[in-house]
Image 1 (cartoon, helix red, strand yellow):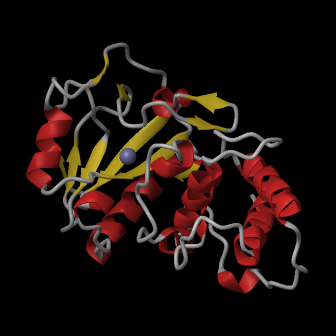
Image 2 (cartoon, rainbow, N blue to C red):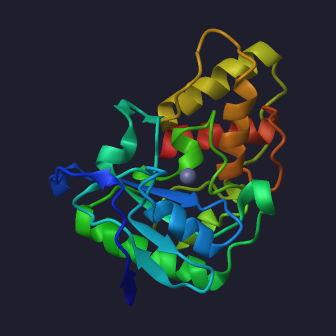
Length: 240
Ligand SMILES: [Zn+2]
């Protein structure tokens, strides 16, 4: 695998033990161009970075050594873990993102990502349920990598988690809104999502629901706990 080294200075100076690495976090760059994204990730002024960037042609840039903590995830939670920078490797995919014209991810880019993830998964024994998107761990702030990111292709190569539509039979009877919310958020809590209350509804619930849909029900991201969304959460909460 050909990797071009660029050196970002945006990382924590103290080396980390590699056995602390438990997560792979997938991002998109969300900027107008590759050049703008790289210069931001390299500039000391912005204090952001990641370990790898993959451009749309499938070229890999290494920004920070894996034994250093890169600054890609920001405030984040998953299961009992907080601030996932310290325990993760961050991979950015070149894509203009929702703000500048969200693009389909080219196969070339995804195939290279898959190979890189397979390598990292093996090297650090990363569990499939710990291969996550930025919006999973920061659902109130982030949309990336978004609903066009083909998690199902990763799943075919034994990377990450996914619920295929054939597993979801919408036979569950319709439920009242309160019960639906309760079951759905309990499922999400089991899967690992945070930033919501199990007891109290909030106007931020919708952001959590859309984050879940961008990841697992990509053809219809509507922020509603419909039966299909609920069933997908049922399946995942029991099978990962
Ligand atoms: Zn991100």
